[in-house]
Image (cartoon, rainbow, N blue to C red; front, side, top):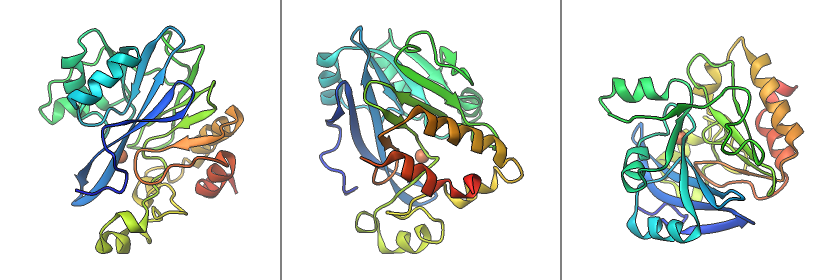
Length: 244
Ligand SMILES: [Fe+2]
């Protein structure tokens, strides 16, 4: 299926020691969702794989030549499906899951053994001096871990902003994406997710303010067009409903 982000399963540099990989589209509620992984090479050569896309041998070889695959990150309750395949290929890698992920995987009959839960308010020892981390609070359902790679000033989100491009999705999905406010260039938090934060916007505001304080230049997201510049402006645009 064409996602519009070909070539797929290929490392695409975003800055020094940071890449994205566009993966095959998946079906989510019947809709084709393009997928994206972020790869960071830490100063000691360890690779940090955020929201790993579908496993691919050639991609695994390319990663192997970049460094040692050390960390696999499942950043929220719907982004863990490919962790198992990457664990099988890189058994020394440590898998980290956002709160609730391990339980959800188990309830769906998936036997994924995560090594650690991601900490809510500070980064893990393996990357604490290079990547900031927090788990966004306030939602009744969606507990997403967000990250900031200091060296490249890149904010790494997953689903908190979705930004589908009309030219890259079927016509019928455009009809749904616009009222859901997930159509580029004005992609935001999907409205159904936003509803899960209702009454607790203060927590989300706190998280967005922290993201702005980190001083990002760009924002990588998992679905649709990512934001190569003006990160603060994009955060203020997408999260206007808690910042106003
Ligand atoms: Fe997603």
